[in-house]
Length: 112
Image 1 (cartoon, rainbow, N blue to C red):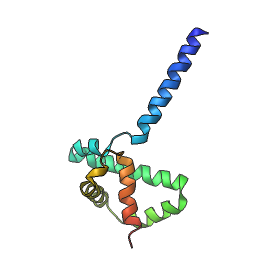
Image 2: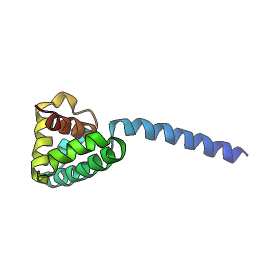
Image 3: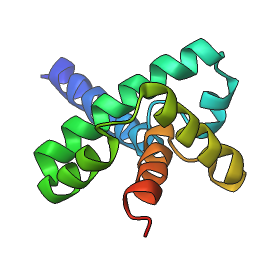
């Protein structure tokens, strides 16, 4: 019984720690900026996949807007858009890179 209590306490603590670290995301904008160009390029490819999949599942209207805007863009273009956003918004770099990517994408899909 004591072992079970210890296990449950550890599981609870891990859940809390994981939830707090997930708030920032896996990497912050600051950490992303430390990557090599090759690492950044591959990370952005993953961010694109994450954005498309999550919006398709959770926000169909936004998914269609993103798809319509990005479908003719190359990975290189999206990479440049994201890096430009980070360079122009250094005060945001403490936030998660995935969150910042969504802000950058929002700027291009909602521009008039």
